[in-house]
Length: 113
View 1 (cartoon, helix red, strand yellow):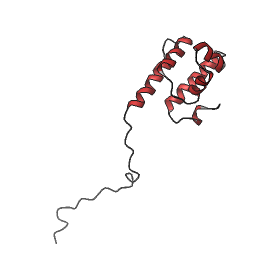
View 2 (view 1 turned 90 degrees about the horizontal axis):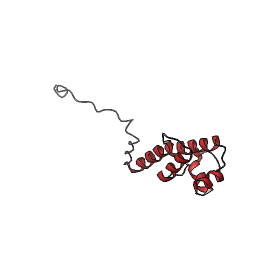
View 3 (view 1 turned 90 degrees about the vertical axis):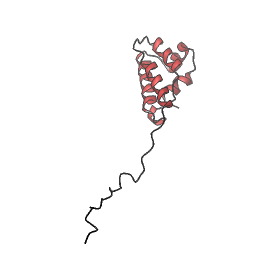
View 4 (view 1 turned 120 degrees about the horizontal axis):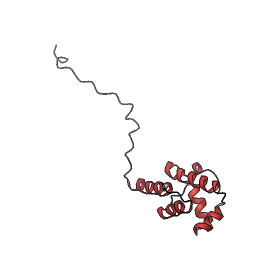
């Protein structure tokens, strides 16, 4: 189950999280199993986060701590992902809404002959 995050999720924030995680892991010269061992989780969890599974805030904090990132990008992304899940979905537009022509108003004198 390897591949780009785009193949597994449509959520751009989750994809971004996975892409950033992979970038940091590779820049540190770590394999997924090595990072998993350092964090005390499974290789599969690292793979899932990199390929489109919604990360937990706790895992994100662990990643920020491990990589010593004071700006906390993993935590911020995970919190935003969690907040997005709590917001009501916007109502989809009617497929015909853009095709409707505005109704014409009758002028006051149009019925007068």
